Amino acid sequence: MLHWIIQAHKVRRQDDGSLQKKPPKDRPISYAAHKDSAIYAYYGQLLGAGYEVCVREHGISDCITAFRESCNRCNIDFAQEAFEWIRKYGECVALAFDIKGFFDNLDHVVLKAMWCKILKMERLPADHFAVFRSLTKFAFVDRVAVFNEFDISPQNPRANQRKRICSPVEFRERVRGKHLIQTNKTAKGIPQGSPMSAMLSNIYMMDFDVAVAQKVQSVGGSYRRYCDDMLCIVPHESEKETEDFVMGEIAKVKLEIQSEKTKRHHFRLQGEKLAVNEPLQYLGFIFDGRRVLLRTASVARYYRKMRAAVSLALQTKKKADALRAQHGEPKQPLKRRKLNIRYSYIGRHNFISYAIRAAKKMKEPAIRKQIKPHWKKLNAEVEKAQAKIDL
Image 1 (cartoon, rainbow, N blue to C red):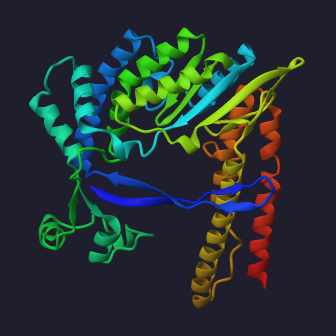
Image 2 (tube, rainbow, N blue to C red):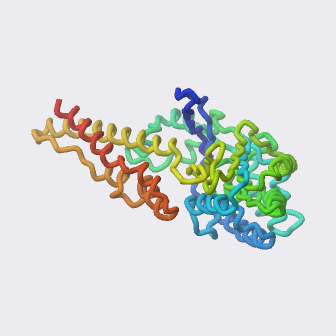
Image 3 (tube, rainbow, N blue to C red):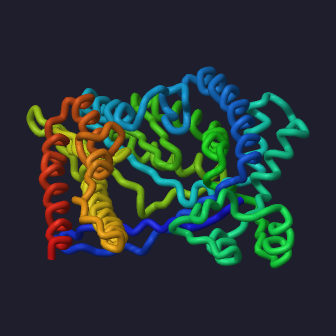
């Protein structure tokens, strides 16, 4: 597998209004070769069919919302369901849990047992075991190291009509021969990025989901899990009992909850209005008991990407103008088509279209108000770039 680290940089606003930069969060990503990916996808579909049967048998189909084609819904729907449940229930507490290093800490013994359980077999068949072993004892090469070895640009790997990293002979001589291959020698962890890793994470949590869902439902609450993010909405008097139960069950599957990321959102009625001690952040949305908003970090990231895209368009235009000047051709205006499609309401599959869809589904005008300035800001960035060109 080809392996690299994606770093997420986050900034948090303090109580005094100042901004504090948090340490970067590393997210390891691994991609399999094309043929291996096809095999993983096939076995992922086989396990997915068995998994769907299991969740229906245990009555938890609505509780697991990530990596399931059968849901036919998106984060907007899942978030809206949770917020509507809170509005309907009134006074309650929403407990938000986050699992530490989810994919990196999946225990191989537990994973194998759950794999057998989904197949309803005592032992894995030979072909399933081969796939299991390849995903637990996976081999990988660091992308930076292998790109440096073959002088490949990380910004433009397909430059000079390159279609693959190397030939089989080059792989044996320059990758394996120079000991660039690493293997997972621990008894836990699967690569995040393979076509079946997401399904395996759901299978791994099957017994946990059944136990927690039954516990939460027994006190009149609601349980939802999206990958490593869990949400338990329960009555106030069941808060401690539910939290202790979740901690006990997560230990059974040899995982750990990040205690510093556990949030307790207490919703209470103030007259006829619902208030909360700290707004609930869930699946990219914020709910304060009265209205739903997009996460401010998501909006800020959109504007940051928009400014970077305008800057890149400016650099591209400068290079193109230099070439035109060599051929005695006049300069052309800054091309805006891609910018408009990616960063404005004109596009059909971008952040703005997602926000508009969320505002419509949730009947929430506050979301529309959040993104209303985007067209002016895009035009302002383009005008600023145009001014630099004219200098």
